[in-house]
Length: 121
Image (tube, rainbow, N blue to C red; front, side):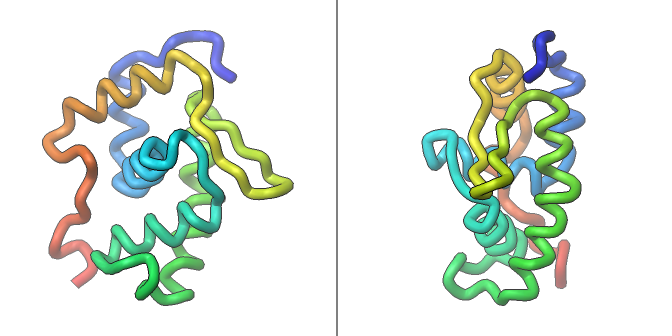
């Protein structure tokens, strides 16, 4: 857990990734807790503008790889999430950095995040 409060510039760096925005938004919508599997499914669905029921397994798998190897480590480093790797539970940390991050997110042009229309066409 981080001991220093996140600076707004760091918060915007974290939010530079649309997938991290999706991940954080999904956690907030689920009272601060979800699983890696559910987050991967929802991130993939948002990315591909479909429902979590209609998303394909390869799309979920790609989202899971990015989530586990890129986004969760980045958010862990900033002290904004906790991960229980034994059961795949991801929770928003009880840390002032979380408040800074969501305050920065509210300043973005689009929050909650929506995927760009042409990104995967």
